[in-house]
Image (cartoon, rainbow, N blue to C red; front, side, top):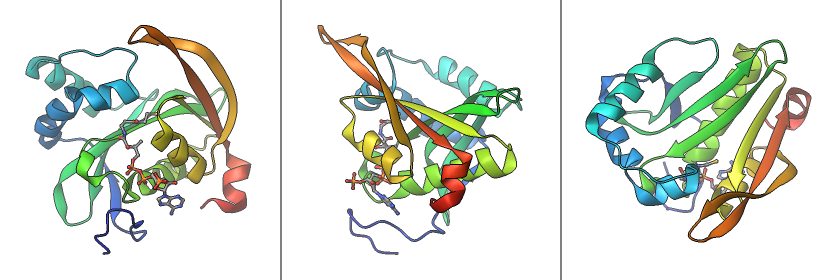
Length: 186
Ligand SMILES: CC(C)(COP(=O)(O)OP(=O)(O)OC[C@H]1O[C@@H](n2cnc3c(N)ncnc32)[C@H](O)[C@@H]1OP(=O)(O)O)[C@@H](O)C(=O)NCCC(=O)NCCS
């Protein structure tokens, strides 16, 4: 593996796993990281250990409406992040993707990209869905590059969607369709 912080990694390094109790400690850290909260949540909160443990317990329960997965690296036991395929609607064959690489020193190495590629494969090939939506705050350029790098298409802007630091911030809506994916983004 190339350790350069800017080099994408080889295809087989990232793996998606079911959550286990081992996710609790890192999750507690990531959920209380202000920078991660600002990039991925509408509001900032302080989460207690009990709250995060309850969240994790929910994430470990099988559900037809949401798939929660831990992002790991081959050969490393501790997770580096998490993602979900939420709001799964079989009637409309669609869902919504959310992702966090919690270990910030690992940002920019291509792990997020590989995790998204695997999650998209899961949504289309395993769940049989036709469309994945992702929403990102307009002031989160890394996430924009992540989605566009994986083939997502910008479909619209929810103008002034959230309130933060005394100003309103747009939210960008991205979508990826199965036929676009199978054409060239595998
Ligand atoms: C957004 C986030 C998940 C990205 O994870 P990451 O591991 O840093 O992302 P990556 O390194 O895979 O992708 C980012 C870069 O790699 C590029 N990339 C890497 N491998 C690639 C490949 N094989 N093909 C195309 N693009 C690739 C991306 O285009 C992007 O370019 P950049 O170097 O100019 O930034 C991570 O920063 C994070 O968790 N942030 C906080 C939470 C958040 O913002 N979540 C998203 C909310 S929607």
